[in-house]
Image 1 (spheres, rainbow, N blue to C red):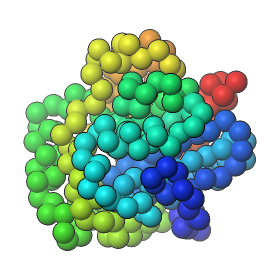
Image 2: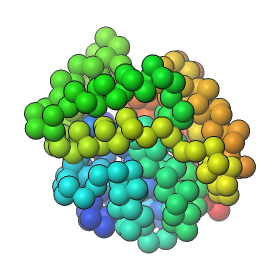
Image 3: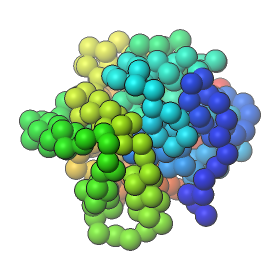
Length: 259
């Protein structure tokens, strides 16, 4: 029931789940997923706020139109659709987009949250993620075993089942392009973080091997109004696996910044 498909509305050039009224909160998912990855947050936050959860181009109900080729073009599609300054929350590649939006379109962002964000990967991590990107042909569905193992180990759960379904139904070209962007980008620059004037919260999991606690701690320290939180016993898919802890952290931040 938690990951049931929800109705879509237009959000600029994208399709999105839009629910609730009040301060707008935009939720940006990661590579291979879709808006329903945020279902727990959508259902909770929409009781007090307007929640907008778009499908990334080539994911869910959003088309991949061959014009979304780099990080700035993903960011631009979100920026064009936001009408009033929003609290923007992103997970994984969605966090990359959220921070890029805050840096390059600050008039659209009231506050930013980056969950499981990468920052200055080491050489081994760069080689691993770029090797995975090069293995994608953009025509056939990628084997979901690797991501599922990294995200959930060998544990069976409703979240893992939902992610497997999304990964095996995503547009192969959209997935390849998004993953390639994710693999070639290395997070915001220290200079850009130092110049970020809005409040920013960086959250990751204690057991996250790729978007590590050190990365989030470093980004928060560089950002003038940066905050950091590390979720105990959580890893990469914590918005789905540790929804209570994540939702409480996000609601505390949102209530302060939505004033």
